[in-house]
Length: 194
Image (cartoon, rainbow, N blue to C red; front, side, top):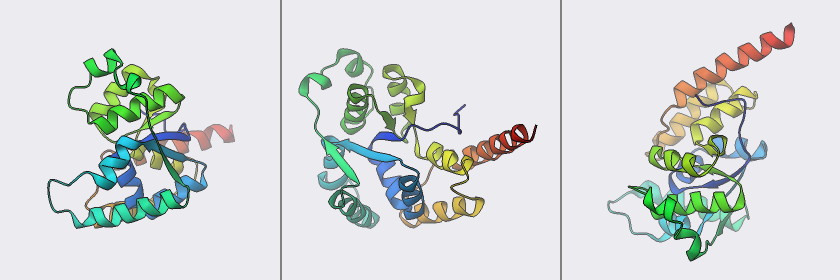
């Protein structure tokens, strides 16, 4: 189970997690106010901004616009990785169906000792073989951590879900982690009264 009371603030984000965060201005701005910082790799920048889409997806234009605005404002930076880093045998051996962007995020996070922010289950599994489990995070975990720390409320979850739906996005486990954050917050408050 994810520890909703803990969240690493320095994150290397993959395409899916960037899209999910940018889809909800409320979640993004609250995370930023809480000190969460994002960066990514040039492979992810290519996937987000330049890689042709296999299908028509008009919502992608809006997400790209939001991403470009964050990059211009200096809120999200993209970093290159060395070819030698990509040739790490263990990572390539376990790559399976993980995109180059997700792989580059794991490699860069490992090299820079930052957390990986990914909403892809396969990437999470692989990242946990390369990093401490506490350094593998997802967007629903971010929400739960913000909620646990009283930076988001119950109605914010509904707004985030509406924001995501409007841009054809969704977050697996959001409701489950919200419930866990509620439970942990009640326990923490009970412990403070004793």
